[in-house]
Amino acid sequence: MNQDYLDPINALNVPELADVTFAMDFLVRAKEAVRNAAIAFTEAASPEARGLLRNQLREALAMHQEITELMVRKKWFHPHELHEQYKLDMLSANNTAMIAGMELFREDTSRRGMFERKPDVGLGGHEA
Image: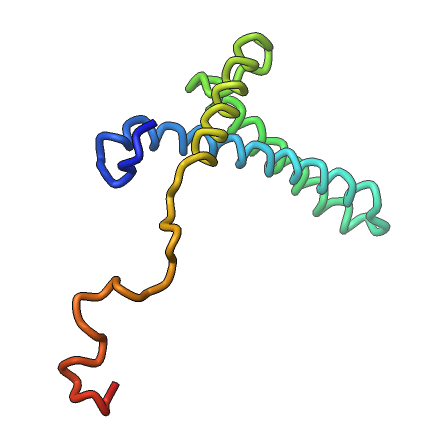
């Protein structure tokens, strides 16, 4: 595995992976919004509250549908082709495991040795 993560050539396809990840997270949160609005609607006591929650539920459903259609159109989500969705899920799991295995940070996280000069040089020493 290549360890030079600062080289731009090693960032190929990363924006696309991020787009898929963000879209899937957005879809999950839209689904949660639908669920929460439906629960709140069933718990509302007044007709006014039920009316407001009904509108929120419709908006949440529309948002969920819009995100789903975008993801299907871009082939990021296959709700009716389980074999294709399984391939995407396995690719995502493998990418997650690969990223988790990367050494992205130094072992020594102290600040010593990271500066060319002491931070207070040039300030007269007493002004730092």
